[in-house]
Image (cartoon, rainbow, N blue to C red; front, side, top):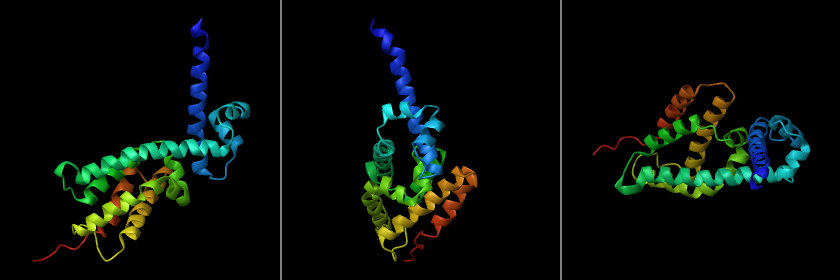
Length: 196
């Protein structure tokens, strides 16, 4: 008798995921879109959407939580690549790998970050402290220019990357072209070679 609810649960889980996927796409394209547009894109009616999420803000909260959870893993991995286990890899080399992985990434909240810089700040805000610390350490190691504040340099790096992601999402660039452009722009932040 316990299997009678199984299809209903699977359908409910599928609907919930469809709503979240649709919300990220729709809100990425139009940050002011409402629940009607999200429901239509998800292929469900408003009643179904409201059974899963009481408000539009609740949908955004779930997407933010997912972004934060995946972001923690992503940041921890990037920091480990840079400084973990005795490694001493150049920061721009790791950023290049992270950017390429990001351009291939199709997580549902990526469009949200790329479409609205304020939303990117909101989603990435918890990681800013780590990002600034990585930039500062890279400046101290002589890899990045040190005549700019680390906080500003971090924000500039992030803006360049998000612009490239947005260009790919909008069809204005291929991932390869975006990665190449980002690489060229970031190379201008490399510290000049020191002469002894």
